[in-house]
Length: 86
Image (cartoon, rainbow, N blue to C red; front, side, top):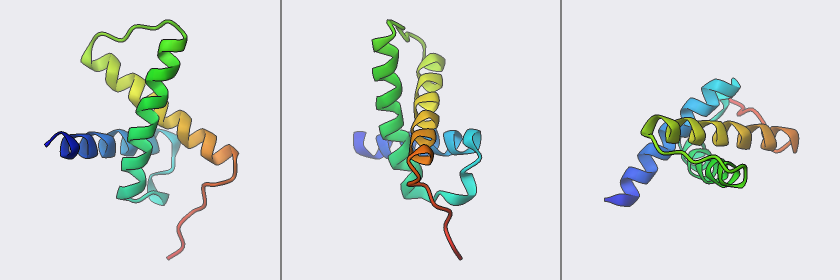
């Protein structure tokens, strides 16, 4: 059950980050899940490195979405993000 919740929340976080970064039309559900999960880990790692303690549920969502948006930005900068062709 925990895996299912992780996949759903990761997908929502990845989708919100892709909307924030203007990449929503180019990402599918699997990419949103991967970006959401890895981006959340990145966001919490960076918050910990900066000494930021996130205690509330809203704060956790914000850190997760910002981490996922940062991950999308990094992937774009590396040139690994290509639009899907139809």
